[in-house]
Image 1 (cartoon, rainbow, N blue to C red):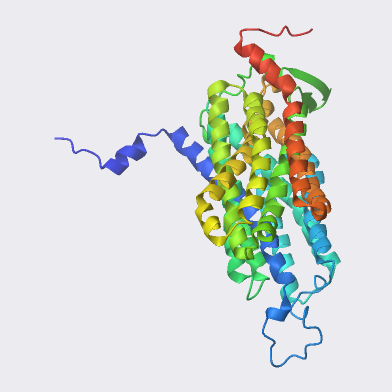
Image 2 (image 1 turned 90 degrees about the vertical axis):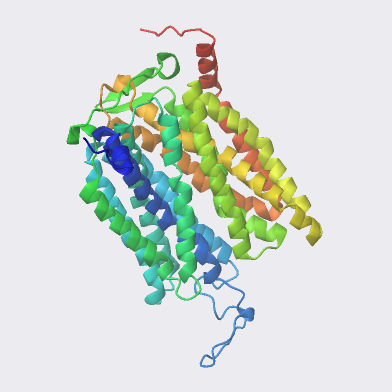
Length: 477
C-alpha cells in the first residue's frame, strides 16, 4: 500500500519548477526594491532631530550653553532657514534621480541586470551610510550632505529599470496588472520599514538611522549578485508570452538609431506619470507636516496617521492592476482613478480643516472617517502611479515591434519613470513655495495636476473605448 504524502509536500509538488522560479524572482525583486525605498526614507525622519526646539531639551551639565534655542541642533541646520536647507537636501536627491533615470535605462539595456542591480545597491548602501557617518565624523558642511544625497540619487536609478525589466522577463501579459500591483507594494513596505528603523536610532544617534539601512541595502546587493536569475532561459524555464499587445492601442512608431525608439503610448504615459508623481510625492514629503500644522498633532502622531496614505497606495495599486487586467484598458483605468482622485483631494483638505478645528470630543468621533479618507485618497492617487510604473511599462517594453529584445524594457521603463521623477522633484518644491500662502492653494495645485494627468491620456482612452465598441484602427504603411 502506497503511503500518502504529507499535505505540505503535496502543496510544494503541486507547483511546477517554472512556478517556483517565478515566485522566487518575484520575491527577490520585491525585497530588493523594498531596500531601495527603505534607504531613502531616513532623511524625512531625521529632519526633526537635526532641528529641534532646544528650549524644551534638558541642558547637559558639562556644556556651556550660549543659545538656548539652537544649542541642540545640528549645524548647518540650526539657522532660521533650516526648512530651505532641508528642501535643498530633498531636491539634490530628487533632481539627480530624475536626470540619472534617463541614462539608467541605456546602461541597464547594455549591462547584465544582475551586475547592474547589485552594484547599484552596494553603492547606494555606501552613500546612505556616508550621510550617517557625518554624525560620527562631526561634519557640519551642507555641501557634504548635498553631494552624498546627489550621488545616492544617481545610483538609486539603477533599481527601478532593472527590477521591472527582470519581472517583465519572467511574467507574461495575462495577469501582469494584478501581479505587478501586488508586487509594487514594495514601495510602501520600504517606506514603512525605513521609518521604523530610522525611528529606533533617531533620538540617540541619528547617524545609525542611515548606517543601518545602508548596511541592509548593501547586503541585499550581495544577495542579488549571488541569486538573481535575469531570464527564464538561463535556467531552462519556459519564457512567458509577451507580444500580445493590441495594435489598436500601442502600435509602434520607431525612430531607429541602433536601439533608440519611441513607442506610441510612451509619451502620453510618461507625461501623465509626471503629474501623478507630482501629486504622490507632494503627499509623501508634506502630508505629515500638514497634519501636524492643521491638527496640532506631535510629529509621531502625524507620521502614524500619514502612513495610512501608504497603506491606501498598496490597495490602489492592486485594485488598478485587477481592473486593468479584467478590462484590458490600462489608460482608461488610470484616467478613471485620476478623475475620482481630484475631488477626493479637495474633500480631504476640507475635511481636515473642518474636523481638526472642532472640540476634542468631536475629533474622537471622526477618527474612523479620517482614516477612511486618507486610505481612499492614497489608493486613488497612487493607483495610477503604480499601474504606469509597472504593468504599463512592461507592456510597452515587451511590445512585438521589439522582436524579442526584452532588454529594451529597461529603456522604456527609464524613460517613463525618468519623466515621472521630474514631477517628483517639482511637486515638493512647489508645495514649499505655495504653502506660505495657505494650504488650500497647495491642494488646488494638486487637483490641477490630477486633471492634467487625466487629459494627457484622453487619446489612449478614446482608442481603448473604440476597441471595446468593436471599432478597429487601420495601420498606416
